[in-house]
Image 1 (spheres, rainbow, N blue to C red):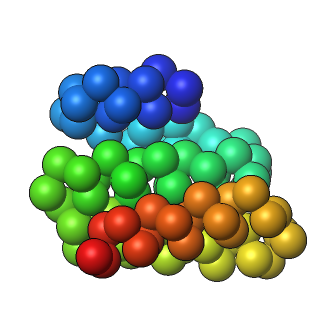
Image 2: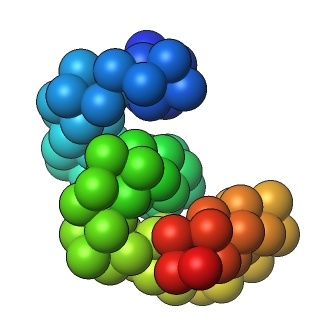
Length: 88
């Protein structure tokens, strides 16, 4: 997941997307809900920045719902901030 986030920060959105999708699949498969929420957040941001705004927004909304369900304040703020950026 860190590799994918780093790739997105460098503007390598195709690499970020493929890496984060694989990480998300693994996190979900192993039941790591919090990790999956953070990966959805990072994937949503990368997709939004690469022009896939609709899918990025959906992922941010899922990450936000997961954050609220887990009472994860950091993920809640991160998802809200990214949603605001994508929707502005």
